[in-house]
Length: 398
Ligand SMILES: Cc1cc2nc3c(=O)[nH]c(=O)nc-3n(C[C@H](O)[C@H](O)[C@H](O)COP(=O)(O)OP(=O)(O)OC[C@H]3O[C@@H](n4cnc5c(N)ncnc54)[C@H](O)[C@@H]3O)c2cc1C
Image 1 (cartoon, rainbow, N blue to C red):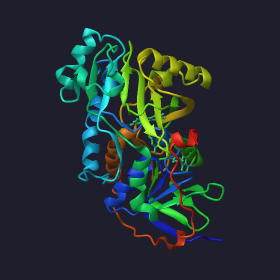
Image 2 (image 1 turned 180 degrees about the vertical axis):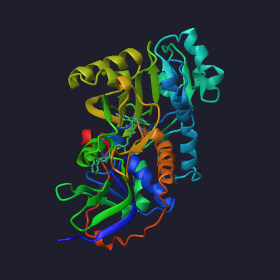
Image 3 (image 1 turned 45 degrees about the vertical axis):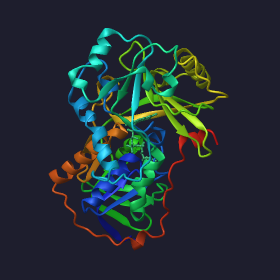
């Protein structure tokens, strides 16, 4: 039986922050855009993210500035405009967990670090904090070291997902690959559903690690992907003060990154990343948890966390492949090899979604893809709709 064809400007596959950001941006620009998600919105990396809108200081600690550092440096201001309702995407209802992020040295900072953080390059982005203004966990007479405030913010990721999905519910669908498929004919890809065949001017793959499988389904040889694993640690505790900070040790990357979250019943959870999570990516969970407990004891020995409940979670960052598995320094948007109407996007950081959005627009303009179709969605009315992923702290501490 021949199924009807639904023509749309854009069909996005994948509803993490990248797909949802693109959905908002493209619909706002007048493109008819549909999004297809095979699980819950924000599954995988987005719901596992700490929600930090980086200004790139943690990447600049080795003193190397490149184009990537300049792009990321601009991001906190771009997001703040969106949060004020003045940017490309209206994020006024998104919950901000913290307007500031701190950085502290686990010991007396070296002169080099001090002069770097005080340098002209970082003016307006980093400020030394006087002892009286230290965030509560560092406000203790035994604390030694310098505290800096970074011009970075922390978003509540579940709230971000909700704000991005809510205005576009009618365009967001569940896709079940047991009955759906991607088909390639004369170098053009379509999404074949039981109800209809979705023929898009552009298929946009925003499926994180899932992009690899989507490309394979089309027989596309690239772009190649890499996974960089992390094992993050979570602890539910009884200390009420939230804390958002990087701790610097003797390496140019943060020794520990802490963000604070609340379970749905209001219990505080610290979410720990940084070198602990990268170096511990392959560690046994119990051993990593023991290491995390030791780190907190060493770094914040005066803190009374009360009864603690610990978990760890392994997650992969999915990105375009780089030489030596290095971190890419910007968002990636590129063509699926051998497919005329498919683009692949990896923001590589939640922070870089605005840069990814701009790159998608540039690619569409370069291909002269303009808003054209106004699809009738009644044929898709019976399709399931994805829910939002459960926040990690609720999934791991039910
Ligand atoms: C532990 C961790 C902490 C992080 N912290 C931060 C941070 O603080 N700040 C920051 O800027 N960045 C952070 N990042 C990076 C950031 O989370 C990611 O860059 C970003 O979330 C990637 O979004 P995405 O939408 O591309 O991918 P994902 O979030 O992985 O979403 C992919 C979506 O596509 C769906 N999907 C997959 N395959 C298919 C398919 N075949 N069909 C349909 N749907 C499919 C998935 O179900 C999922 O919903 C962190 C990453 C990790 C792993």
